Each structure stands twice: as structure tokens, then as C-alpha cells.
Image (cartoon, rainbow, N blue to C red; front, side, top):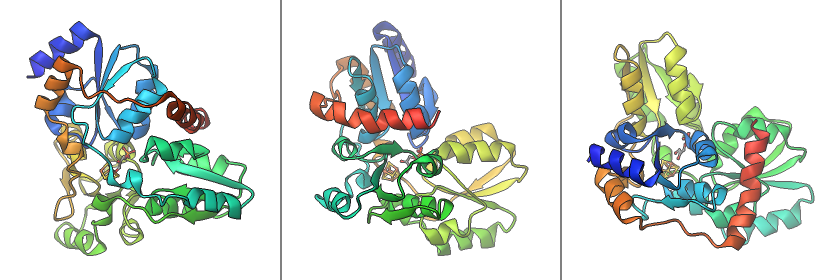
Length: 299
Ligand code: 13P
Ligand code: SF4
């Protein structure tokens, strides 16, 4: 299947992007693998005719918003991020009416419709820096309350209003699970994604995006780690460090939507060129503004 995928990519001038949570064999077959921010940048710079996005819908949508003339294909169109929808209808307008000087900061894990109503997008790798540099004092951070709270703790000079959304996978990782791993591996450092609950972040030695966690393990001298994020990162961590040990909370955090990106699905979508991301021009134009602002502000 990998050979066929390679051949089809070449014939069709297609590029394959995969998130670190995609299945290992898909990451292995991809041209670019990374966190959400890296993949958005790669999508923007790509000169391929077709982008096969092995992630969840908001990632494919962001690639399409940034590349209206390219075909963006999803191996499984039902691969969606539950958190991307967790903003109550009408709440953004209510907040804008309440605070004159309000910036709506939208985590990239959100629908295109939510991006349209926002001032700037962020990812877990640039949220602190971007919020810090906004001129606004009042920030409505959507949809993730955990990333929002993490940013609020780093930027105390701002009034950050949290929205009640979260990632079900990261929210399920508990302090008890982390402490159980710590009990088994007392020397292990805890590396966590900021989508985790505050009780887990409080136990962590390092907090960052998937790419930040991978980069940290690369330069850090420790030999053992407890990884508090989706277990797809294990492919890269284990490949980079055959000499180090990586443990996960039990049950191992697994995003079923990310795992829908199988090699079979990639091959089928490359053959048929169906399952294309379609966004109306009106929504695309409005959603592009906060996405481009993010790319600009994180330069
Ligand atoms: P990253 O931006 O760290 O890759 O995270 C994306 C995501 O979906 C985390 O659950
Ligand atoms: Fe969304 Fe959570 Fe899956 Fe990331 S791990 S894509 S935030 S559901």
C-alpha cells in the first residue's frame, strides 16, 4: 500500500500531511508530519495540486481556507475533533456586547464557522505569545477551557474569559493516573499537553504542544518520561530515542478520530479523489482573517 500511495502521490502531484496522532504507518508514509501549527504552515507553503490531510476535519478545513485553489482530501471525512464544536451559539455575540475591548481568540481546534467570528487563531505552540502581544485587555478564549486557563496563568496581565469546552481525550487523563505511573517510574519526567486538566499540568515538568513535547525529549537528558497526550506521539518519540522509555497514563489516551486515517483510507482517497473539503467562499474569506493573523503574529 505504501508503494501504491507513493506512486499515486507522484502521478497526481499530491502531498500527504499527517498529525503526530495519526497511526504510525501513516506517519511513516507521509511527506510532512507535525503539530497543528507546523501543518498549517506547510499547507500554506505547498505547491502541490492535492493535499491529503491525515488529521481531523478542522485541520483539513484550515488547509483549504489557506489554499482555496488546491484540492484538500480527507482519508475519512468523519474524522472530527469533538472540541471544535464546543462553543454555545450566541455566546460570542454576548461577550462582545459585554466587553467593548474584546478579542475573541480561537484555538485552531474549532470549526470554520467559529473562526469566522474570531479575531485571531492560535495553536498550543503559539497561544501564550500571541495573547501576550494582543493590544486588548479582555480576551474570550474559545473553545478549550484548559488551554485558556494555561494561557491565563502565563499572561496574568490580561482578563481571560474561559469557555466551557475541552478535549474529551485529554480531560480524561487524571492526576491519579499520572501519580500511578510516577509510582512505577519515580525518575520519569512528566511531559503534558496544555489541553490536560490543571491537576495534571500541576504535576508536569514540561507543558507544550505535541511538537514541543517531542523537541523537549530530544534535548532533555532524562531517560524516562510519562507522556500526557494522545499516544500517537509515541511513534516519533520511540523512533528518535531507542535508548529512552516513554510511559502513558492508563488507559492510554487515544483519539479514535485521528486513528480513522488508515493507510487503506489514504490509498482510496488518492485513487478516487473524493471526500474533498468544500467550504463556501463567504465562510472561507472570513475564516482566513484570524488564520492569517495567527501566521503573521507568530513570525
Ligand atoms: P498540537 O497542536 O499540539 O499538535 O495539538 C493538536 C491537538 O489536537 C491536541 O489534541
Ligand atoms: Fe480534538 Fe482531542 Fe482528538 Fe486533539 S485529541 S483532535 S483536541 S478530540
